[in-house]
Length: 126
Image 1 (cartoon, one colour):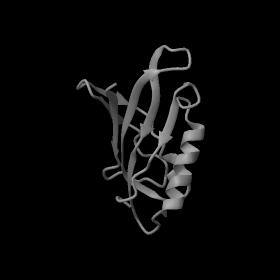
Image 2: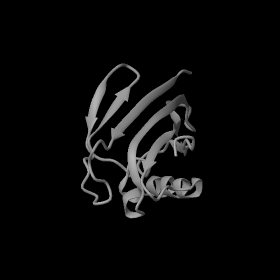
Image 3: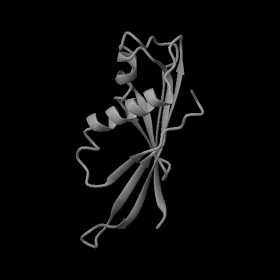
Image 4: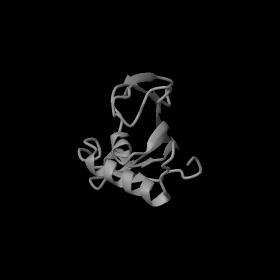
C-alpha cells in the first residue's frame, strides 16, 4: 500500500525561546496539498533544558495495512523530526533521543491511538 504523508513545520524566527513565550503556531501539510494551521508544539521540553530551537519539521509517514482484526487501518506511523538548534548549549544525540522519548510519552495523540508510532530523528541538522 502507498504511504500517507503529513508534514509539520514550525520556525522560531526572531522570537525569544528560552522564556517559553514563543508562538506555537505551525503548519500541518498533507499529501493531498492541504495546509492546516496548528497552534501547539512539543518544544517546551527543549526550552526547559535550555536548548534554543530555531526550526522544527517532521515528515510523518503512515502506512496502511490490515490490523489484528483484518480491517484496513494505518498500521504504523514513522515520525522523522528534524530540529535545528542554536545558542551556546547544543544537545547531543542522546539529549535529542531523550527529548523525543519524553515528548512521545507525553503526547496525547500517541497515547490515544492503537497504531504503532516510531520515531527516527535526524541528527545531521544539529
